[in-house]
Image (spheres, rainbow, N blue to C red):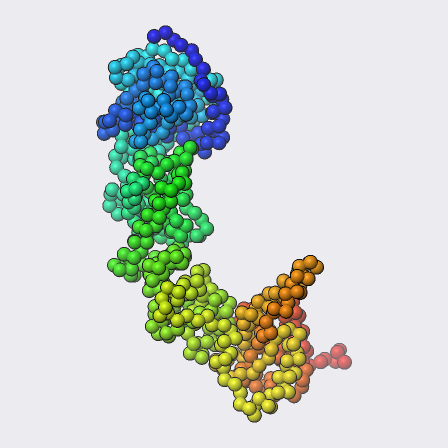
Length: 584
């Protein structure tokens, strides 16, 4: 065979720039591409079990040899000099389902690290061929001297890339990408393949694997199997809480070759408590082979894995409730997010997730059994305002202010007509207080009139009731409609002239009810304030009780409230401290 000099049918420099800047995240993927080509060549022989790939470093070069099917001279021209000729790949037998990659573009990716690539190959029954490609766009094809069928690829490094072809780096990359391959892979005589996948071993081996790969010892492991996608693997449950907004990636193999270490989109968003290692024969990679192609099969696979994680939780509830309780203590957000649209998970949350109440931590099932009606405060601030007072009135109350809790309570009532749910408003609680008798009410009228004048400018209504606990002198209660009115008014004050006019036009829809300052007639301090004969001092005391109720109830402090707190405090201080000679 005479030597023939040719040029690529593409702009090779442009292709290399495209690969390095827009397709591959790192030039280190060249080892993966070489392994893919070698495994495909071995797969084409039909004897994967007897296949072997050897990577040898030395003299600054890297040689990758396989005992695969090899190429003829015609195939060398077609596969190594033309990009994207899928029809020709079909004719040559290199487009079968079980192959990993595309030989031509995979080999060209090696120009990311090499100035020269030599491919010495021979197919059984054909003459050996030596193909030499150069980074300037030329390639030569000539007769080779290979005796056995197979292929040897030699890379001559480009300047600045020598470190990527050293023995240590090549071994690291071969172990990373090819440790699970079904063929034997060696680097400088040392094997890097195990011949099996981690989930074929026992729990302890899996736990060590999780520590090595993800850096944690799993809370539990869940076996994954999705036949439609040819997917097997394992989900490792994280032992510690994780931010739901942080989407952890998963280790994904395609036909036992590592696709990427941090693939997203494999699990539903609520399953942020799991990290997976899987292998698939059917899922499609993106062009860069560093992510999964988001198609219908991936969506079906995601749903199938979700079902298996859901099944694991249900099994825990039936077989190991204590372990489930520990899991919920760590990862309740994920399970609650799932329960928002899954009835089975909603029942699991009802039975096993303990919520904060003013009677201690109770599950929804325990709360229903003890108190019948599920009463809840929709925000943490409302719960803090009402918890102690509600408990004193024998009203059990759930804190629905945590993420998803109020939504889950409401959803439970929708799916189960036997469940009674009430959102307790602060104003509702006032109806449970005891009104003072008629004689006391008449006697308090002058005081209430004066107190109302002091707080009118703050939009607050003053009432006197008797309630427990006695130690609480006053409560500031705001209904939902009153809270909306306050927000509406604040928004109108901040708006510009245009939007201010629009909001003024809507102002007639604002509710008539106002926030209430409820003074506790059973509290000794309140009774002493009521008995103060000095109207100014009594007014200062009422303003101070108003400020104290605001702060204890964790209500927002408006500028007008802050000014009142300052003036009432200074006024009381002025009354309490006697004047000295220098003040006269």
